[in-house]
Amino acid sequence: MLHYITYKHKTSTVWVTFIHGAGGSSSIWFKQIREFKKHFNVLLLDLRGHGNSKPNLKNVFDEKYTFDVITNDIVEVIDFENIKKSHFVGISLGTILIRNLAENYPDRVESMVMGGAIMKLNLRSQILMKLGVVFKTIIPYLWLYKFFAFIIMPNKNHKESRSLFVREAKKLYQKEFIRWFKLTSEINPLLRFFRSADINIPTLYVMGEEDYLFLPSIKKIVKFHKNSELLVVENCGHVVNVEQPKFFNENVINYLS
Image 1 (cartoon, rainbow, N blue to C red):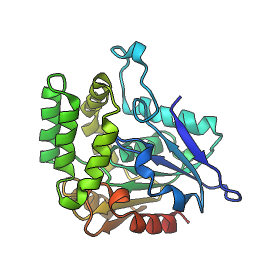
Image 2 (tube, rainbow, N blue to C red; image 1 turned 60 degrees about the horizontal axis):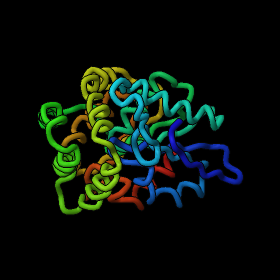
Image 3 (tube, helix red, strand yellow; image 1 turned 135 degrees about the horizontal axis):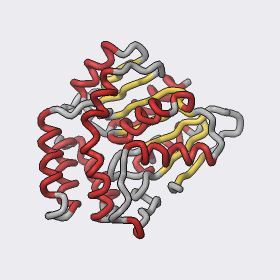
Image 4 (cartoon, rainbow, N blue to C red; image 1 turned 60 degrees about the vertical axis):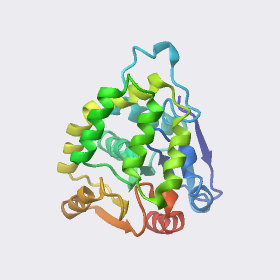
């Protein structure tokens, strides 16, 4: 089972589950914990191979990761904690996992908050992925990760987010990075389905105005998905919860309440 931490509220029965992105860990939510646990029960988890969720090294060559497999890891944790329903807050790739969970287990999802949401790969993103596929077994994964982090978070005010994700990515194994990277082979058809299929679950997209790779597609989605709202954060890049935590916390807590 994944490594996770819970913060129980004295009176509230409402749960909020935080899902980090690829290469990160639950530590990326350190600017959220204090405020959110005042209002809700909080669940923070590390995806497999990330943070304190160590990979199964015995099956390092055999085990195939899919979005359903990773999603079921999350469901296993909320089942173990007897959480019938939760709000889910995600960042970056974590938003794909939340949407996948909502498709597979809609009765477990109260609402979705999608920070730096990835719902379409534009041409630049697809070129990045193809470069990664070519070079993933040739050069150290951390070089690739630093390069991706700089392309996604290029500005001076994105430096804290870049540094945080690179620092967490150092805890990954090379083979673990490759297994996660192979998920990109199924990402395009999955995102295409998510964009076309409206879902009857309240969804708040929180996107930085400088999130050049992913914001344009989210603007289009909220025009057609009836239960979706978009909140654009000024002077902010991809990792909105780290770059603008006060704004993120106030608005998300207000939305969930």
